[in-house]
Image (cartoon, rainbow, N blue to C red):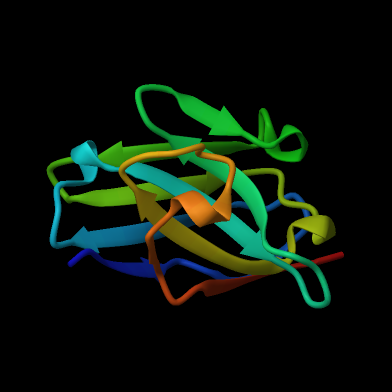
Length: 120
């Protein structure tokens, strides 16, 4: 059983930075596809970034967000720079071992979510 625990969300001004962490237990993070999704109020959950043998990003975060893993900490990270009010959402990390990295249905394990709020 894989357990994911996110941390690092908060309130930040536009242009600021946050780093989200996703601590993984039950399996080695290097053996998983790790993804980050977000869900804003009234909207569907959307793909943000994923990492397998390479990194994947949705267009709106390219050049601003960076996904990474640290096998020694068994943790995945999402470094978010140049944050915009449109980035405000609950961010979820997810783990998978197969399927499309873009589809929420590919991920069998989810964290509880962490709120990111970007003020103007």
